[in-house]
Length: 459
Image 1 (cartoon, rainbow, N blue to C red):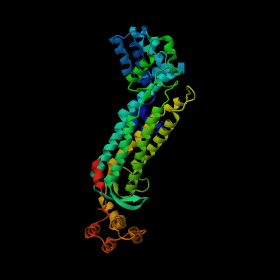
Image 2: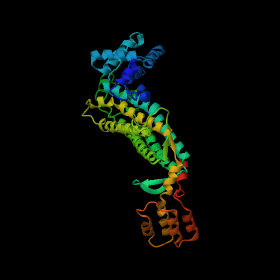
Image 3: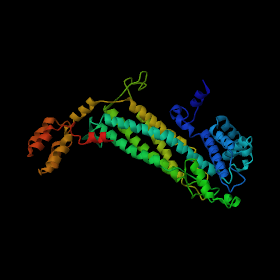
Image 4: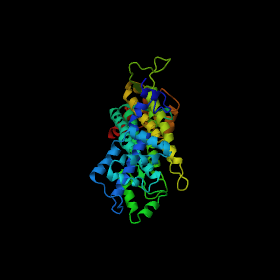
């Protein structure tokens, strides 16, 4: 057994064990290594910003070689480098201070950088580094992992909606036979909802601050009264791709992270709803699932082909949302200028996003196995002619016939298996204009779908 297999078999979290391969894309953004690497990146960005400020004469502008050396430190950060940081932390018992000391070690061989080593972490509190590091992680995860995964699901849904735009299907309200729709239109509904929520998630701001121990640039101003510190901090934050927050305590208040989490949770909720609906349609036989050679559906019932991908997706998206909503509720709350309750909670951002990603992967796996069964849908429609009661009573209303709703209620309510002949006999007895009567006589549950096909093709 190799070390990786051993690690996965003994992992406490299934994200690092059973499901490790499926969530691998997030490892570049979350986890201890990624957090340390991003802290290094933030410290370097701040040092570079100081060197660009003419009023800070003790940190003169870096020559090209020194700039290249700084960039190389960030770009080449390795697992061995992270292990060295952790070794320093065992002495400091402080994770951010360990990054500062490691950086001082790394710049010691570059004279232009070694001379300004004490300006690494200058006037910073740990939260200046941490809030920006988490911001960088959230931005990277959204742009390179989460949005592509959600957009891929949306593309799958759009393809299915167009493919099945005209496929009639019995509607069900309260679980009972209801006005027909089309399979494509029902999928188009999900696509439209998801598209809105993904757009909101994509636009959720990710903010950052670099303003010291309580958010007032106290140490900055006492050291360099003439520097426009707020402008310099905004520049450093923007260089990392984040939006500057000018009003904070020691911590960036995390309202933007809450917005990010809420937006993602809303998209997940749409997909949970879809998972459950597809599960139901598989149960009804509207969808068949393509089988894979060698797979087993049940340990005792050989015939089973279970909708496990949709169940896995629903379970993981639910777990993701439980975490995301706790993050959104908890992170904006901090006692006075600072407490530490956000620190341990923030470390679980990657866990929440990991379960979301796992849900997306499972959902796409399930979609790829689905095959619509038009014959099963047609049989269900033909067995429920009573759903035409809505159409008939509505036309009766138009032409002023007496008690249209009540007549159809007496004919159909609580009665299943109405025959086409029973419906047509009733229609034939109505005093309706000939064109209206002929339209109703020709109507079947499969043709009573309104604009469903058009709506499905429009997305």
